[in-house]
Length: 528
Image (cartoon, rainbow, N blue to C red):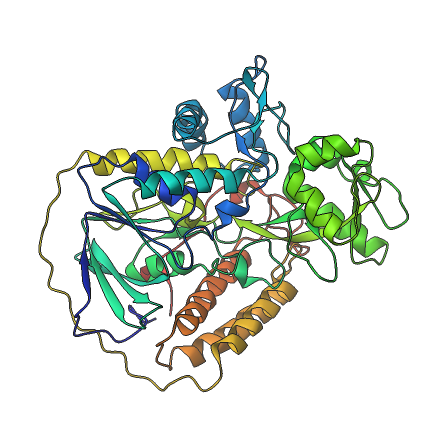
């Protein structure tokens, strides 16, 4: 495997900063806002600042505020959903530090829905209590916009748009900065810094059907892996049970909060079916609901099922779920009268860059948070509305760690990097299309060894071709990253010979005690 993706040098474009944050979602921007003002912080956004998974988050943020709730109950629900693989110490850190971080969000101007003088709480699948705070059904957008506005008003924070981070620069396992591509000029830029925080998000674009935006191609995970960081739990890919299924749109998310507010699932005959699959019915953990829908679609030979929230009045639905109501109406679906056609779509990856309780990785001065990281909290299946909370809690911890150290201003001699290779003949988009088709067909909700081996063979063919080529454009860098991450997902799924959480294998349908462990991938323990 190439250590660096492209050929670089000599370096005319250099930017010196104290802290470089890759990613402009909630985890990245919140981390920046928590870093002391005596440090210069630069945030890199692959596209426009507002484009991120965070901005698409509908449901909300889980925090135990109700009179009958507690951090312990929140922890118990998280561990239950994680199917035996959640790191309980990390979970406790998250749930016990939730309130202080929500308080800070409100101080930064985030407007959550209120119930009188208290924050309005809703319930989502696998939560035993109403503990999801929200801003309508566009919570992520509200939080992102307020955080970005705050960041723009900070003298020590700069936001750089259309900058694609290509590779980490390291020296003796210490991170020294990043090689990046300025998409506007086409020039390579070197960002030198004391600390790098990877908050680049997940890899949903590995799949043809995903709720993720176009930027979610696993770039941060891939660059960390090439630099020697460990990735963990890559086999666990969460499919959201209810993405809109319409000929014009198969990626719009229908929030789990809709089921939390009483929606039920019906098959094409109008029959309720979830009671056949789990005692919690529509409020079972996500992996169970997604698999149940998949099985019901197969049983009834249909492409979708239907979400029924017609028990609620139109005025209530317009107020509680304004974005969902408006979007569905655009497709001639009045959710106060009509059933919503839905089907599962890739939504979230539990795996990522392995971190400790402070967001540190195996590379010194390189940190990770948000979906790019694997704290071990989510185990084999993420509990709804824990993702934004995790990014907040561990982003603040990273900031605290960085803030406790003095700026080094150490000089670093940046090496020239030469990778010989032919130019791409086949457009990168064709390789990307093949990756998506392969992952959708063979590495989806239900898996088996035979199909995983087919997927591995097809991805390795792509890797063998792309490795011989010279990457010069963002599309080419991206497809190389996607192929690397696809391989790691498949190999981890092949290795885990059981079914647990979001990883379900028909050839190993039972959950086995000997697999209560994490699969870790690292360059030095791979045979490449």
